[in-house]
Length: 400
Image 1 (cartoon, one colour):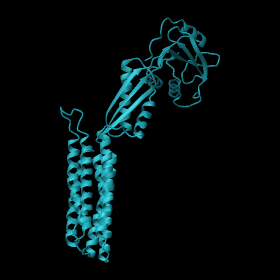
Image 2: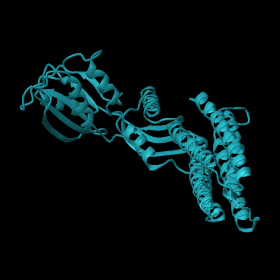
Image 3: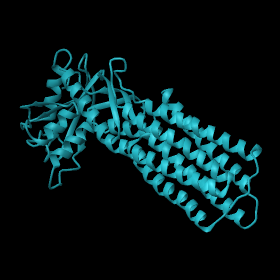
Image 4: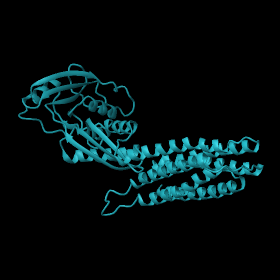
């Protein structure tokens, strides 16, 4: 992608040079102030294109003095371009108000030449804007907007030159009409560039997308905050989360999976920093697959008709809650075990007691990702399991 962006910078520079040559030639032949002003605007764009090209190359560099990269160079470049645009607008207004009056000569082939200064920037700006947005490159987006301004100014030039050919002296008016578009374009670029240089937050849509990705992970119980900022076309993200495990290796594994999921779901992410801490549990929820509502322990996880959920306090093993829920996936033909495992994670189960060995099977991975510990039990009735759990001394081992 970076090579593509640099190539786009070269193409943009070439187009600007061609526009300046064409406009200056037509301005000299026609004597149009509006056309000369537009040529001046495009001449300024040449320096802007050079700045963009340099910015795209420099922004990727990392040095000892700048270990986090020079990504913001692109935003500096976009502000430089904005300043050049505003200067061009001032020069156009100045020439239109106090410049000497020069008669305008209009020929049909001149109008064709001016029409080309409309068509080329219009086609290129749309393509460059699409590439810039896909790459989240502020400098390319800035240039594409500048080309759109150039299209508008060229349309005004075309109209004023054509009107002059019909005997209407509107050349100066046409030049003045170009100024508001240039000022608006320049101001927008300054505002966008300053937001990044001052580390303003990423847009709410992107932050919401990142939060949704994190919340979808079964091992995450709480998302406390999601922060982000732009630096050039790259995004830097930070999240504070609570995970369902106290095992450091497991928590680190969850954070690595989140990092990759965020990079897969959000474009141009340079760095993801995830601060995680274990969930403080004052009680534990135990799940048991049952064959019937009377509490008979089932031999199979996915085929169990019911599930017993038992919640006990961690410190003194006091029974807080006991209920039996129906297995909604019992009649499923495929992957019933996986769906049941996901349901138990959603129910907040910390420990699952089963008769069958789940290690190496699909449900075991879902349960492990959700921070659910799996134990083998020899008990045949839920009431027997409840008595055993209540009789355990001290806190239960931390789920992992």
